[in-house]
Image (cartoon, rainbow, N blue to C red):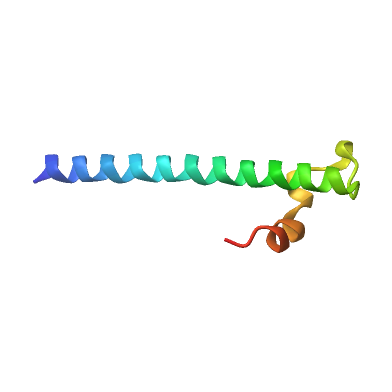
Length: 64
């Protein structure tokens, strides 16, 4: 019984880690595409573009 619970816990933790990595990767890709989109518009200079400043823009641009 204890061994089964440990295996379930290990599977759960591994799944959460994989999910976290996937979400981080997708978010980075969306921010990168948003960065390129805004650069093409000339709306935001590249040296001031930071992920923490893009919350409102990201929610408008990327609706998942």
